[in-house]
Image (cartoon, rainbow, N blue to C red; front, side, top):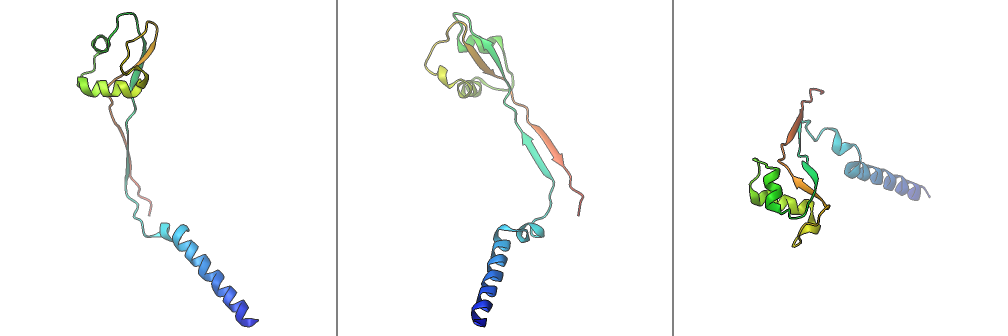
Amino acid sequence: MRIFLLALAVFCIVHFVRVDLTDGTIPLAAFFDEESSCIEETVNHSIVIRAVEGDTIESLFALYPDPTLNFLERLEKFYSLNPHLERQQFLAGEEIKLPLGEQPDTECEESNER
């Protein structure tokens, strides 16, 4: 009976140590250095407009210019915002999202806690 209880105790200790090594606090404790974390967020800038009869992609891009993107990049973003408009003409009164240039916002936090 003592051997069974001793084996059970050893099994429990080994199990808890294994779980702590793989999922617990030991891997997070001292093995990772705290570095400055820079997070670069790119916000998808777009505006919503209402199309009128006779509008085309070129006319909308001319009305709302964006010097940061060339035509092909802007067209790709346009179809990612409006996938339902591929191979279709605009309907009068339809709401369309037009992409505008994206300026990344960088947030850097220095960590001096040790």
